[in-house]
Image (cartoon, rainbow, N blue to C red; front, side, top):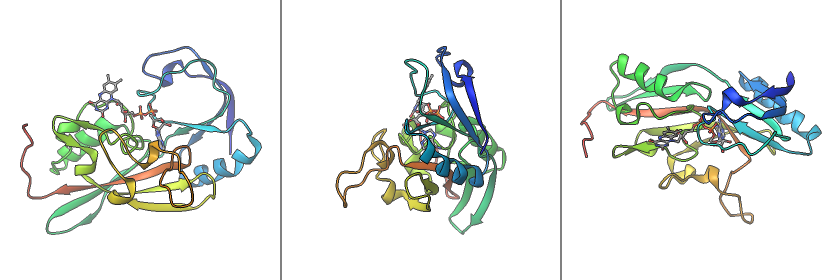
Length: 202
Ligand SMILES: Cc1cc2nc3c(=O)[nH]c(=O)nc-3n(C[C@H](O)[C@H](O)[C@H](O)COP(=O)(O)OP(=O)(O)OC[C@H]3O[C@@H](n4cnc5c(N)ncnc54)[C@H](O)[C@@H]3O)c2cc1C
């Protein structure tokens, strides 16, 4: 794992706040993610995950290890009579995924065009706009458990989506409590784009 020291974050947050990461690692592959999880043992300050930086406010230099998500790739991974299942890496730009899917002739994400940020952050707050939320087009995602090092898959019910809310915004309370805040590093997200499509105009 190659961590870079003293990285300016000004261009990695949409407010352009001047701050630096004491240590930042770029996650371009699943292997990078696994290596970063191992390295966390040597970072008592913990970690923070950075996507496109459009929903964070930096209040100073960042001591936790910054995991900058850059896993790329988007493809059709399955097709049924009813839907196209499209997968995208967490580091993909959200709007570019929307535009690309529409260019392929797979509608469904159009209401979510131009929302700033990355694919990996989209399930965190269940992004939404103009009557459509991510959960309406969500199939599943793969994530790395930053505590155990295990890669796991969640469906929509397991993500516990709510209004700008999900399991990724809650800390687990007790052995049966749900909550993956600070624990799940989202690697890939799959979308269910229905073939029988009606525009949502509400
Ligand atoms: C001008 C503007 C307009 C916006 N309009 C909308 C809108 O219409 N609808 C809407 O829903 N939101 C909107 N937002 C909010 C923002 O676009 C979303 O929250 C978006 O999902 C943030 O993506 P990001 O990659 O920039 O996330 P970041 O700001 O980098 O991170 C946001 C949170 O997600 C976590 N995170 C990021 N990537 C991962 C990952 N791979 N795994 C685990 N955790 C991760 C971070 O740790 C952080 O807690 C808007 C923001 C701006 C600035």
